[in-house]
Length: 369
Ligand SMILES: Cc1ncc(COP(=O)(O)O)c(C=O)c1O
Image (cartoon, rainbow, N blue to C red; front, side, top):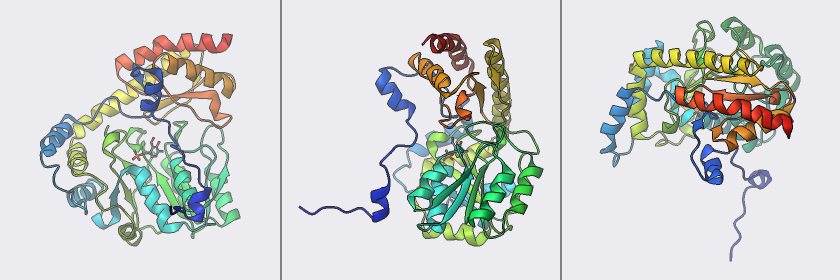
């Protein structure tokens, strides 16, 4: 029998599912979670207009989707007031990150990110043999100055930065982010992940200048637009880099229904405003619940908040495990000192109420174990 041989690089990679899904945990628990507050999905759902458009598109699912994503790409170009040639659409930011590193990373390519930042970029970068160099968070924020210094030190080809940040929810102002972009050595591509930007205060995103060489910005329909399951994201960058995605992308990766849904979601400004309000109210409620339990919280510009459990990572992990055992799905960082916090997504009244009920029980169980 012939033996299938993986590439030398693939042989070195672990076969992992980087995010243990709530579905996996539900199979273990033997029941559905009462509150699904761990994946920063939008419990407020997509626009009803997007749902209707996707329902109507279902009967045409025998057709492939448009490999050029023409309508959505043009609508996004109009939305942002830029040329469609600056936009590439893909299977969420995660999918676009994988294409980006495939285009730019050879074995040994130096890459810079923050230790404990959103891990999918690292997963893909290592998957193409990139060498990760990390800098620590500073006061629960990604540290622009440390990133700049590290890029120079290691001669990085790419630097990844999320604003607002996941897992902490903290953010930097547009001026600080622009300073980061301007002061990184010219050769390094700045990857600015803005997955949560629609829920951040005005003045968080620097102006879009898609002609700027060496900057690529990533946005998604998974968060504020409530369409995580549809897998639609986009990147904005210089035309030449954007065009090069055609060399490697999965041209039919964004399904027909997803394209149609995202197009309708983008047009429904009223729903977006409504979600932004609900996220803000829910964040306030989560801060309040934490404070009622004598816990402090971090300010957040995303659709989740970080709650400081007041002790170390072991204690926070026990709180999390108890919440999960009581049917409340949440997540947390695995990196100290951020792992003193649990991360709780915004949600509807029912989900937040389930969390409110379960939190004091989890805190008590963690303290007495
Ligand atoms: C910072 C950040 N970027 C990207 C993503 C994933 O986005 P998408 O669903 O578009 O792949 C997430 C999801 O949690 C995230 O937190």
